[in-house]
Length: 252
Image (tube, rainbow, N blue to C red; front, side):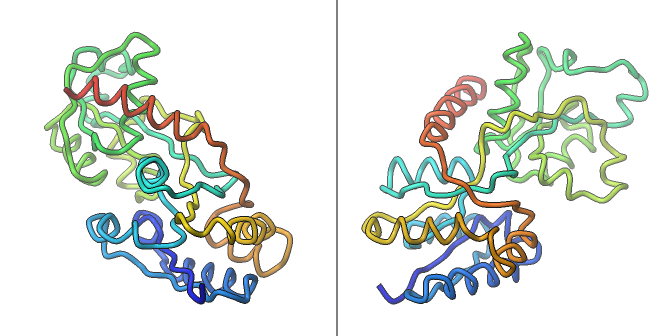
């Protein structure tokens, strides 16, 4: 193999994609052979059409699950400090008329979210553990569309990916009231390796796990907001299966 193709979840390349070119260059230097070629995606549709042709992929939890369970990919590494979490929001104007509003108010109400994404499932699991069951999920195709649905009062509440919410401007955050946010650390993006590359797996994993130990690797990780890369526990796939079951029951 003289080329290792790299693809990255579009959410993680939407801002400063040059960070991933730097990652590919670093890994190529450390591997010496093969060269690493980063192929950016135009969006999720493009990413999902091409991802199964890539050798190394940094994928969100549900894509990790699909690639590993249905395509034979192997999860090898994840960021030690980054997890997929969810924020439960309400329109700020509605909160002002009900200052004591809490997540209990979601019982029997409609909530906007992206049903295909795991933060939705995580929110429903958290609420279910408290005996709170929304009446319906108003489906939107992006986290921005979820924010807009809540802002326009198309739905009184919303579930939003925490990483997206944290990236909003101060003004954008002030227009919403956070009722709850998870800190479970149970799901995460992962680097997965294509089938047929088992002979290269340990060598690639060793380079990834050692990145924080040298100056160049630390700089690349810092730019990606990662402290270090660590092995992926196989239980992540079972956790994704369980979360999807929660979501599927709720949005039927």
